[in-house]
Length: 204
View 1 (cartoon, rainbow, N blue to C red):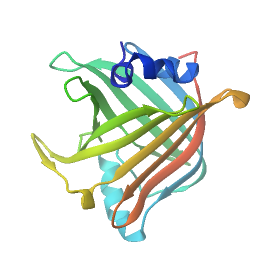
View 2 (view 1 turned 120 degrees about the horizontal axis):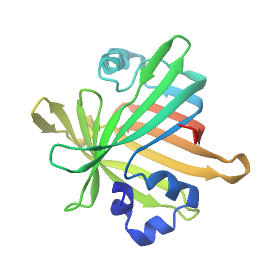
View 3 (view 1 turned 90 degrees about the vertical axis):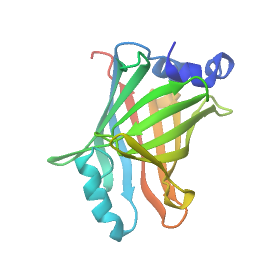
View 4 (view 1 turned 135 degrees about the vertical axis):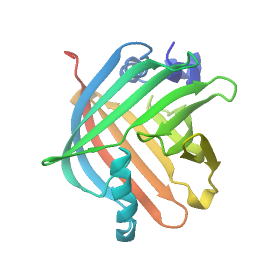
């Protein structure tokens, strides 16, 4: 059973759109997709040094724009403690530049949350909460976050956190998935956001 099915529970998972069920049922092997970001935007200009640092860790980047091609790879792994993990590799193609937004997720059965380690090497940790909307859409929201410094993880106060809100849906008439992501800080507003559409690459 996938970590996302465990997080949602059987009843909620079955209320997802069937194509979203197929996408988030991944518990072995891999899933590949590609599409186009209608818009990618970043925050205040003075955050650019932070975004540039993020490129070293495959987490965020300073570029923004419209109609940006991207690919997605979800690959199942087994952690050192035997837990099921899903590696997320998101690549955005800005002309000759490749920019990444990577993460490693697993399920905490005691706390009923998805654990999300962001970047490579990981520099940020976030609890993730999942819920299903009225139309079978999937909503994901970040909760408690920690700064990762090697073996040390330092809890971040709310005013330093980047609160993420994600909505993923399936568009029947386009036979495609839609994705909306916004990361916002209580003090500076939007840090990072993107919106686009993608399709599963069945041949990979």
